[in-house]
Image 1 (cartoon, rainbow, N blue to C red):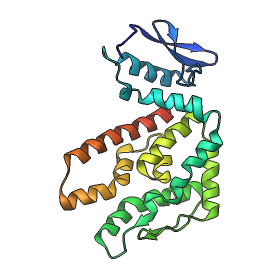
Image 2: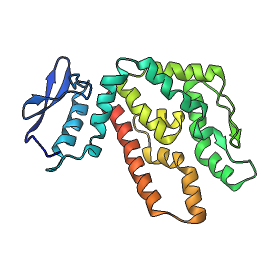
Image 3: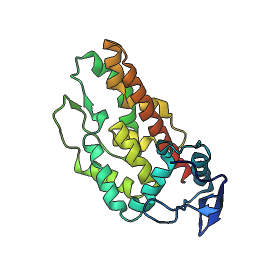
Image 4: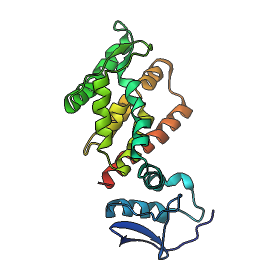
Length: 230
């Protein structure tokens, strides 16, 4: 699609902020007014529109897509979206370890254990660590506490968490990514530990590196999106 607008501005409206293209308000994919809670997020959305060239590239609308998801899906059914996210705790990457005598297990303990311990302390929960790939359920009280944590998030934070948790295959990392001032690069390295370990053993693959860079950018964008929406 060719670019159909010249001017991109941000205006306050109806208790929120929205982007205007040549003075015209934008609507979400679902047809709702695309209004966000902060001027900072609206400015980020405007930057995506302003940064488009003569041809519009939909892949560059990361913030817009999360905004539309928050407005069209999450706002109408936050409990349903939270129910889709909670299972990432049941199969959290950080809980599944190599056998204790394997070299990789030592690397996992070094990088993953501090993240799990921090989550346990901050949330008042206990995670089961598992050696091998056989699934073991997490304690019901842990899942209940995590459910309460999801319930307190606003639609924009839930939209962001849906991305951070899925990209990391970890609710612990997904939630940590929403913490102000967190080291996102360190979190992404933790999420990709196994992939990096294999690269050390067998060499790097250019296609895999490009895929990782795209996913890393999406992970960071989702974390920033949550912060901008606060």
